[in-house]
Image 1 (cartoon, rainbow, N blue to C red):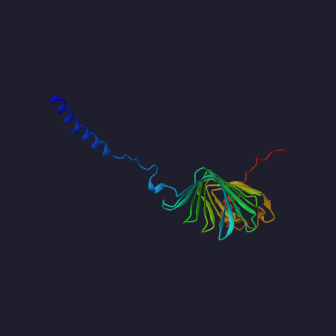
Image 2 (image 1 turned 90 degrees about the vertical axis):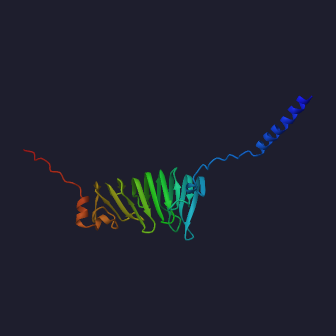
Image 3 (image 1 turned 180 degrees about the horizontal axis):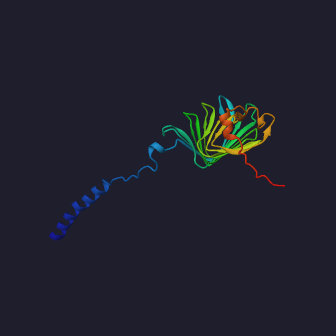
Length: 218
């Protein structure tokens, strides 16, 4: 009988110890999936929306995925699944469209950065293709430091550097080669094209090479 009582008295402290251990269980938490400095404040899928500028609708954005990240420096919009962008005039007529495999818009700098299969087409029929294109909305310029191809109704040019105004009516292509159609004013028919008023040194870079033909004897 004394032995049983001793076992009961030994079991009571043991149960108290186990109960105290259960009450002091630690909470296990997993780290955040994304670091705080890379989390986007907005992520939208299947986007087809209109964007206004100063109260006037200027663009249509079509993309599979659109992220807005205001934590990264500089803040940016991210279109990693591709971008199709239409630009409108004041009467809502399409002035141009731009598409790219990947795009970034730095909202504070008002700078677009396009990568991949970049294509641009304007209302005048100009077609631009490259692997990279920057659109500075402050200086109202397009530029690219990679191989670019420009095709118009009157000519085709290719070069390693491209610079243009926002309408792509005045542009420069350096280290170029291509073909041209002669018009009333010399090279081409577009009076507003910079190639018509370019310095002689620039025109010399853009002239077609001439080849001498062997003389045939009678």
